Length: 199
Image (cartoon, rainbow, N blue to C red; front, side):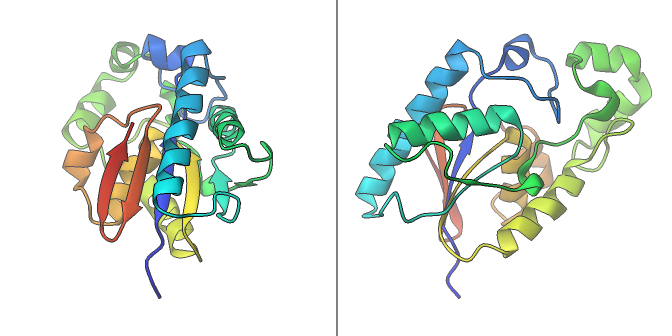
C-alpha cells in the first residue's frame, strides 16, 4: 500500500497563544490574527492542491475536535470554496493535554510545579504535568490515527500533534521535535518520507 500524503495545518493564533498560555484541551477561539492565518493557510492549500493536480473536493478532510482547529478548518475550506462544515472529526488529533498547567504560562507552570517543570525541561517527550499527557502519549494516538488512513488527507490540528506525527514517521527525534516551532498560517506536507512546509 502506498503511504498517504498528509496536508497538515496547525490552527491559527488564539489569544492564549499570543499571551504564551498553555491551551492543551481548553477550547480557546481564534483571534483576529488567527482567523487571517487560517484563511491564508486555505489559500496556500488551494495552490498546493492545484499544483499537485488534486481534486480538492475529493480528498477527505479531518480536524481535531477542539474549536480552534474546527474554526481553522472552516475558514480554510471557505477559501477552497468547499462547504465549510463538510469534514470529519477525530479525537486522536486533539492537542496534548497539559492537565494542571492548562491556562498557565511557562513561568507560572514553573512556579506551580518546580520539580516536574525541571524534569520536563530535561525530557519534554516523556514527562508531563499532573493530570496531563506526555508527547509520548500523543505519539501513540496520532500514530493510531495515521495507521488507519486509507488515502491522502487534509488534517487540521495542533503544534503538539504535528510534533508527535513527525517523530512517529521518523522525520524528527523526540529531542529535536520538542523544540520545533510549528507555524500558523502554513501547510506542512508529509509525503514520501519527507516533510515540506509551505507558507
